[in-house]
Image (cartoon, rainbow over all chains, first blue to last red; front, side, top):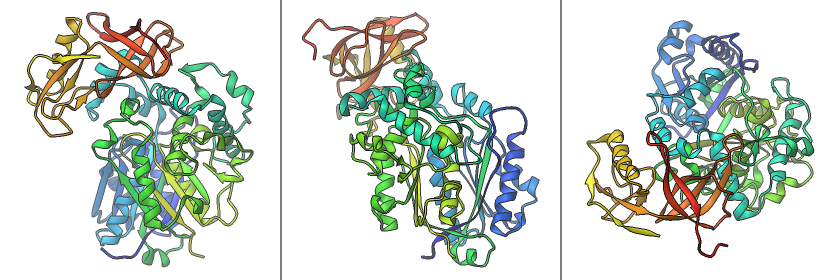
Length: 387
Length: 131
């Protein structure tokens, strides 16, 4: 293993569209992977490593290799952490390029919403815990991630005085960002009155606390910094990447409210590892891309990454929070941009570090990407692209 | 409030997840709300597990629980049910109530409700002092 850093040399995302049977997951994936390779300035034939989410049912690594005519694929990994895989994929790819196993590793996530949400809700032999959820949680009303987050919010509210206004501030900030981003779905403004008037779907949460479903794909190409210097793409260095799991993760995500201390999550461990590896503090973060499948998840991550104090939720009510005050999810995130299982957050981090984001943060040097605050998870820190 | 573990501990490793659920169903069918308890280290688990994640013991027993303390309550607009997260004997478990949502820190009594095919743990108001 060399001490050389990994770098992300190419990035591409398809248009994010409302769920519709217009294009298959395979078509979306191929478009994103080919475009990411082109962005990096390599031929797809140069791809010799593949990292993907385990639950991406859109195209397998072998199908991808066959369809694109990939040559000597020497590294192939699937990461089973759901949304927590967003940093893990980059970590696996970084290990491969730093150890010399592979030179150009493509990482991707494609979401075809109707397929993915049916997979999450229905019997899934690839996830045996589905049957645990069916037996022990479903009869008690924990049927979806929104139900789990509604319980987490209820406990957070009881312990820290958190109110819906706090969540509303995050939903509104996401819309502000999305309104200035071409590939975001929900671009109309949202007022606090509209947010508070939305009917609840679970506990105190409404549809405005939930992600927006889209079909789309995101792909990136990871290589070494040395190789990246010879490529056409503006390479972004990976300053830190970390993963956290184990028994303390508490099993699968639906169990998050049943953990003995639900607000001390694996995201906190990831945060500590990232800050140490990168040699930074939370104050050094110029833009934060935080997994926001719900507003509650984003709030938890703000605490876990020490971007606000635990229970210090009034910080999000400060005018400009999420924009001029700590830019967050500058692509609209999952709440307004579209749900790509954390990987669109990686793409936005790369754009911010290249200086090409639609909502470019002036002078940004450090982008933090944080995976979800439930179960095993991951994250990464990106640095400014070489001039 | 809990009652001592019963019956003696057994290994569910070979029974797998199906056997584990059947072991709990036997208790639910006779009206007993229970969580798993490791006799070796006293760790408790819900949902049940095949092996103690704390000390590694393959032998696990069950502990009847008749009350819990509310740490979260969330009402479902459709069904009118309220899902509860409860502290019970060292772990947390899920339950449901059709009554008004009890406040954080309230103690509730636990009974088996639902249907024969789909039993569930139902919380009813505790008659003692509430927060």
